Amino acid sequence: DAGITQSPRHKVTETGTPVTLRCHQTENHRYMYWYRQDPGHGLRLIHYSYGVKDTDKGEVSDGYSVSRSKTEDFLLTLESATSSQTSVYFCAISESHRASEQYFGPGTRLTVT
Amino acid sequence: GQQVMQIPQYQHVQEGEDFTTYCNSSTTLSNIQWYKQRPGGHPVFLIQLVKSGEVKKQKRLTFQFGEAKKNSSLHITATQTTDVGTYFCPSNFGNEKLTFGTGTRLTIIP
Image (cartoon, rainbow over all chains, first blue to last red; front, side, top):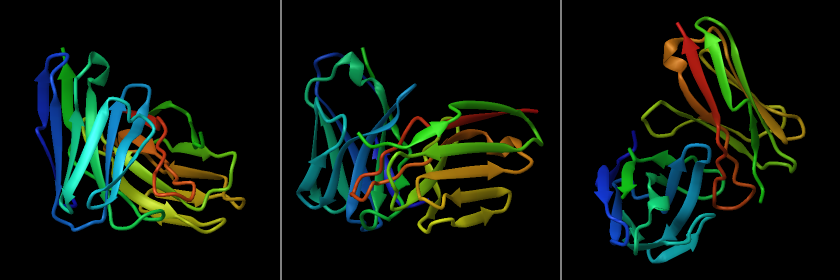
């Protein structure tokens, strides 16, 4: 597996609290992605990054923000968590864009109570 | 938005039977990728198809890309319990983002 770690792996938090998930890679890949996975919806893209400080929105970006200050780290922040954000979050990386395969991290299971 | 429709959503097969999942798009695809996700795991890249009519094999798995580059299929011969999981066929529709659907969930009856 590619060198991708996610932290924390599991988190339970209360509605209204801020939450930050971290994705760390050791592959020096340019592209990084955050997805959420929910039953019946498959994988949906939240935000992605195409370089340090370069990010763009995916299909379900409302309520989420991201930051990438270093090549190896991509942070996903829920400013004020809601129960609808209970999900499994996956980070992925790819070497280039378009035709490049993506490598996924192990995921973070987030529960918002 | 653009997406690839995958059928069936669920498939239960007896161990040893064959299995096929299909992906269809209304627009021409520049390429299509296949991923497998085991229960409780993360998606793992299997293969990418780029050329019209392309066929690639990985042991018991056969991947095809249609002549018109609008559809693709994954066929597994003589399924084994290790084949259990969800199979996805995302495409990027010519941009930087892969669009995943809900995939096909395969369960094996021993």
